[in-house]
Amino acid sequence: MKGRAPVHAFEVLRAHARQLGKGNYAQRTGVTSNDEIGDLARDFDAMADAIQEREHRLIRSERLATVGRMAAHRLQVRMSGRGDPALLRDLPLEEMDLRAGGRE
Image 1 (cartoon, helix red, strand yellow):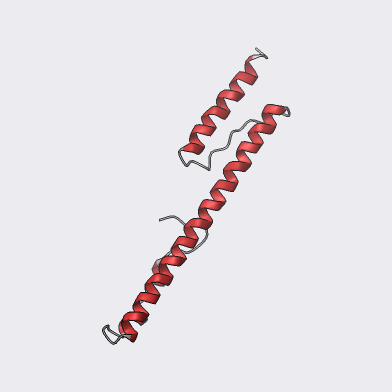
Image 2: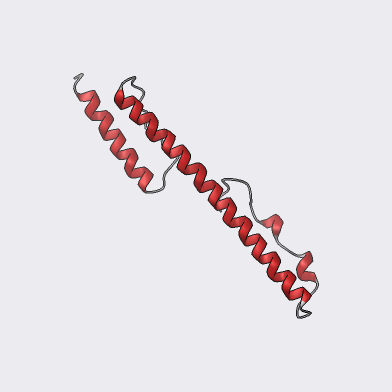
């Protein structure tokens, strides 16, 4: 049965790669061997962590950019005299979750 262990580990890595491709970055391989397969599994897990962190930073950046565009638009409307002065007071900044990694 010892020969079956590497085959199983490769099956786990293939399944993990498919999950990464679907955007599931939270799943880990669970392979703990101290050989080349274990090294590869740890690299897969590190890659998933890096991708997830980049995705969280991108989401946060997009949210901040959206808030900036909303504020700029409302300021432009207010300064043009066409809008209600309450627009500047009522920016919904507190409604947006701007924490890194926060998802809607």
